[in-house]
Length: 535
Ligand code: ACM
Image 1 (tube, helix red, strand yellow):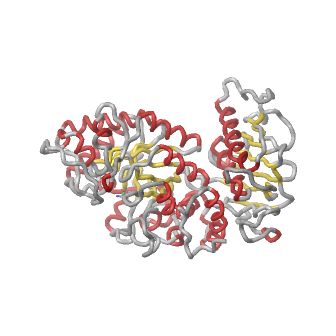
Image 2 (cartoon, helix red, strand yellow):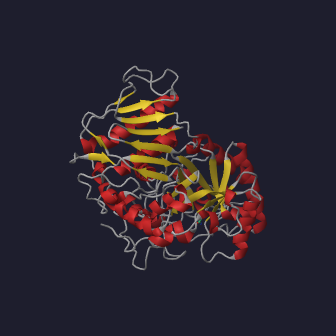
Image 3 (cartoon, protein in one colour):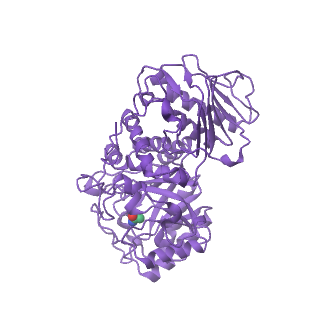
């Protein structure tokens, strides 16, 4: 296997100087599994078509009409072609028509690769002067291949106004598939509320780096952010403020569905979280009967944690849990329902174990897979449950061991070590935004760890992947999210996607530096870490 971009010598090493020569084939984040450079480049021109073909090798031959009568897969390939065309059109100024008419040349998106090792998400990109061909076994693979093509083009392709060509892609072949099936990012929309457009913007940024899960932290002490028909005050009252006392907000069911649809169009699965039994002040403030003393507390706009709990002994608590999880499950096509379980410091240990057993049963009843923060392993995780590990340096051996033991007994793990990929941790003493309870997390520290060996004692097979959460106590808009997420998010994406043997800090920092102008072209004001040789 040829890893990296070994024969890159003929092209400029400095990113952003590719006025005529294309960027090296392996200069990507995440770094692909296999890169074999060679041959002359492919060039997109004013007459380039985007040819889409389904598993039969080509389409129905009916020109630009629908590719198949039943045709969901073909329709999906066509949709990916249209997405690519719309992505490239503003900067190139070319028409880039999408067609299923067989013919030579063009950018070719083809389903039906015989290479089983590509799996559902892998792809092969083959670039010659005659054609640029992306093949995959499933639409998700084609979509990820399109993101690779996008990164191989000059950064100015991201501009929304016409730019100078040429639009060349280096010759050669990339064969690529992800290391982990779970490659997530979490957005806390509770501490501060983010409108649908901000969530879509983040989804588009995640898609560029092949992230495939969007975990939405939909409820917490400071705000309830999803409409629940059977308990309407959760959103109308519980969603009416946020940290600092701003107006807050919540997603209507239609808005949530819109987020789910948009995420799916970028091959991301939404993982909704209703945090239970702690982190529930917004719910307790909305319904007095959920409190053991029957008295609703005031809404909360501070940033303390661990003070709220549902009333574990009251039957109405389980009506609430059943109603909420039923409605959220019904809105969510994805596999997972995340029920939190972290920092339940106001719930006794005995109550916690009893409560988590009941809440997990409700998730199963509505056909979803339980996900919870790793404190779930202090209760009894149900079969198939996934624990999200968010420990850090100060997490003691007993707690680590408990999570590792659960993993040995079949609980899946998603790794979100707080002192590595909590994207809201400050980079340095001088970072204005963010928090520092897990430590200062510079770009190298965030990148330089391996999921397979991170949690001592946990079997490698238990690790489903990684997730980079961003908590928003201090973050109020997309600009602030981006200052904290970028560039660390790219490192998390690479940790989740790339083979361990293809990754190391010394080559990553160069590939990351080459992403800087692209982030700038996308309007992302990222942290210019001195650890990275930005051009
Ligand atoms: C967490 O950071 N409380 C999961």
